[in-house]
Amino acid sequence: MAEIPILDIKHVGKTYTLGDTRIEALRDANLTVKKGEFVCLIGASGCGKSTLLRIVAGFEQPTTGDALMWDKPIQGPAPDRGMVFQDYGLFPWLTVRENIGFGPKSRGRPKSEVAETVERFVNLIGLTRFADAHPHQLSGGMKQRVAIARVLANDAEVVLMDEPFGALDAMTRERLQDELLELWQRTGLTVLFVTHSIEEAIFLADRVVVMEPGPGRIASEHRIELPRPRDVSSPEFNEVRRELGARLHSHHAKKAA
Image 1 (spheres, rainbow, N blue to C red):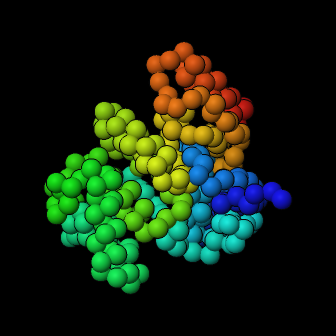
Image 2 (image 1 turned 120 degrees about the vertical axis):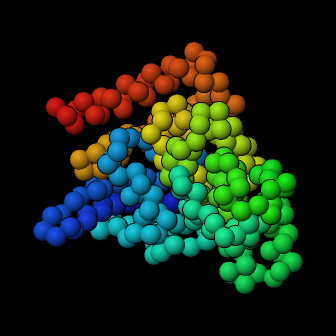
Image 3 (image 1 turned 180 degrees about the vertical axis):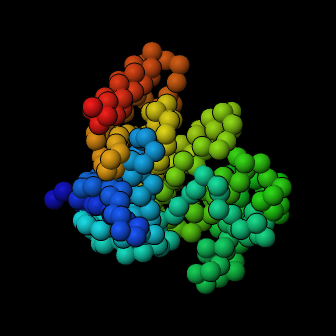
């Protein structure tokens, strides 16, 4: 019997209506993600990456098709799917500890369990010294670590990441990429990650899904066979980058023709 994927996107389309205008943001998207897989979505602006992510998160319902988790329809947001945004989305009035503990506390978990969970994730993201700081006292990289920990502390099985490192400087971005991979390998999480960067997608993903606009759709999928840890300066890495870049640009060239 075939293994049930944790996520199964079947012929999903999304159309928005603005006044008399209908905008088709996503057309006939098909994608399966296995438990523990790290999948990156790449493509130009307007190709439906964030729309697809929001449908999986349960923030929006598809106009056509089905979005399933463990073979059951996704009908709205739930703790088993956590979203990490580029702008962190932390509560500014709460400390690091309180932000991380917000989900378990809201779900009525016992105080001792919430405290234990918070301490575990504060240690996991290396922010013990800043546990009582507020978001405005943290760097961008620290804020993003807290945002990831907050999702994990809420028992997420799937982490949905919408260009989470896009606003960070290059050195912080590279460090957080390494930390995210380490966290992913230690926890067995399933990650669906949106990025504009071909290099970031190849560095992180088991599989890269290329999307194209007009309307947004999945154009192709590419399994990344490079062993981890991956060296972005190696000839093998750069060969994959050239191939994927050529595919991405050929999709866009066809669309423009």
